Image (cartoon, rainbow, N blue to C red; front, side, top):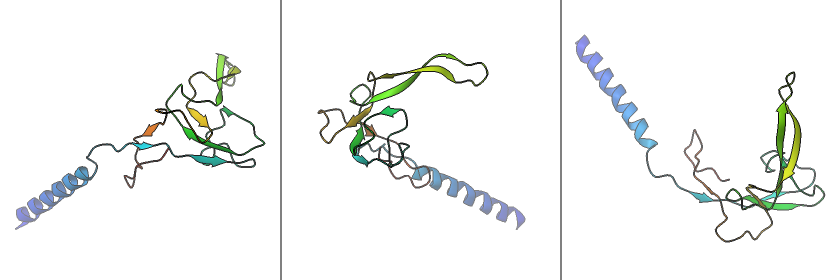
Length: 129
């Protein structure tokens, strides 16, 4: 009797684990980047902004979206130089456009749209970028 219960419990556990693992399988669904709106007074951190490293006119609204690396038109701040031994921060920064992955404006070039393949960790819903 006791052996039967243990065996039934073990089989039930294995079945539940197998069912749970099968929920996460499948092909990754790529979704194209969606346009976002940022206006003065809003945070530059995501959401609603692209991130504090990007540099643009802070006095007007922007329609922005993610593009493939190197196809963006928004400059970003890149930290360079040696690390300060006390604070472990870079000593200098420069602003460059090279390698940008952010497009400012409604009409991006053909083939530039970034495709996001990430999924929400809890629901499995594709994450828009």
